[in-house]
Image (cartoon, rainbow, N blue to C red; front, side, top):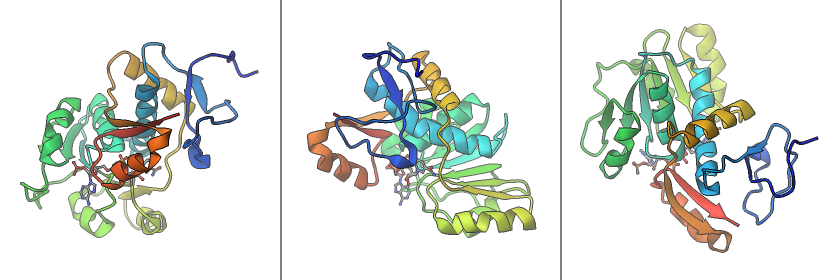
Amino acid sequence: MTGFQPGDEVVGMTGMRMGCHAGVCCLNPVGRVLAKPASLSHETAVAALFGGTAAMDFLRRADLRESERILIVGASGAVGSAAVQWASLLGAHVTAVCSGRNAGWVAPLGATRLIDPARHNWPNPEEIFDVVLDATGTLDWARVRPWLPPEGRFLALAGGLQDVLRAPWVAVTSRQRIIAGPARERISDMQLLMQATADGRFTPHIDAVYPLGRIRDAHRHVDSGHKRGSVIVTP
Ligand SMILES: NC(=O)c1ccc[n+]([C@@H]2O[C@H](COP(=O)([O-])OP(=O)(O)OC[C@H]3O[C@@H](n4cnc5c(N)ncnc54)[C@H](OP(=O)(O)O)[C@@H]3O)[C@@H](O)[C@H]2O)c1
């Protein structure tokens, strides 16, 4: 029993199995697939899920609370722009780091403050953030640690093995935390994201849509390192 009928419009995630660069994708729907709200296009629905599930999982693991200060680096990517919105919905004060050309659409997502690294020397060495989320992989623990209070959390979303290995050591030697590794894709988060997108509280940004036949161009676009939000591939 899947609860679905042939022809139903659905949206889902394949997790670590990946395999979505294909015209057809076959997967067990339990816990991975949900009905797509009729008001959303497939492109909008998948853009909401990719950045949204990662941002929600990391913000939950950080236990981000109302009025806390969060620094989001890479705020114009799929994950960063989702994190700006979700952190703002949770009532946090969001400082977003992104290039000036993206300021116009990132600010209304809920950023209290924007920093353009090309124009500002950031952050102010005396500034403190309860949570630092890095979606660029350019920050490391040594750099972030002075920005955190004794119970601060570093979300190394695009981090590497060193962050995963360092996390338990930091947890036993201090009250600070490093949160790293793959994000969990929960069906409950996917449902919440579909609802929030359908009722306009969450807006995934789509940079470009490529048909599968132009997959090379899609990869080239992503590999530029400066896509805005999501790049979508359609079958
Ligand atoms: N842990 C997980 O489970 C998980 C899940 C999803 C994604 N990720 C990872 O999260 C990262 C973010 O993915 P994404 O798709 O949201 O975004 P992205 O396209 O990889 O990059 C986001 C933005 O970061 C900025 N950026 C890129 N290189 C930079 C640099 N060297 N210094 C400063 N800023 C830089 C760019 O913004 P500007 O053009 O505005 O500078 C870019 O648009 C990826 O590494 C992805 O693999 C991890």
